[in-house]
Length: 243
Image 1 (cartoon, rainbow, N blue to C red):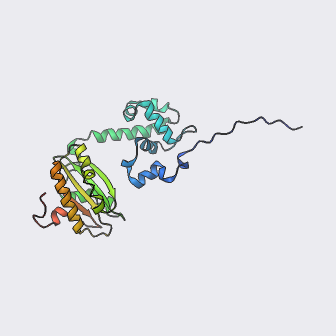
Image 2 (cartoon, helix red, strand yellow; image 1 turned 60 degrees about the horizontal axis):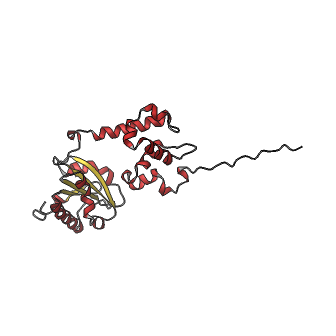
Image 3 (cartoon, helix red, strand yellow; image 1 turned 180 degrees about the vertical axis):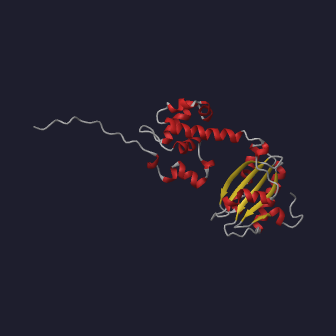
């Protein structure tokens, strides 16, 4: 006689981050576009790494941010409170609290602890290893205070310097937001030869003139090659630019 088999409820399938298209996954998007392009939810998801049976890691991150009122709430939450959240535990809570503490310490750095730019060589030291091996052009902007200390390092564009830099408002936007009086623009030559082109000089002139209108000084335009670099301020013949 056959045993009767009770009907079982269908198993509900829950999508994980790995089910997302590669270009939609936070870690891959960070690798492709930089951390600054990610939302707070995405960054938190990278720190937590995995979700639960009910929520993938992005959904878990959304719930945590909503419950605690954003990053400020997570900063003030106790370690035990985070451990008690479903899907967290000691390991994830420790990762999260450590990341938040690093952010706090960075935000409270005294001005004397910030990197100070005294020469083109200082810029090259700061950016060369990040830019000299790239197979495409990137444009980086250093936002500096009145003492020429780096307040922010912005990786703004990929593409050709001539095409990208015509968006002058984007070049100066972060200096305006932070009320900083100086910027340094830096881009790389994938060929390895840092010799400025005539286009590089023309773009520099445009940025200098725009800076005069905004009361923000373009201190220099640095070109990173491999292994050398060039400073347009130093390379241009005397009197070509009114810095």
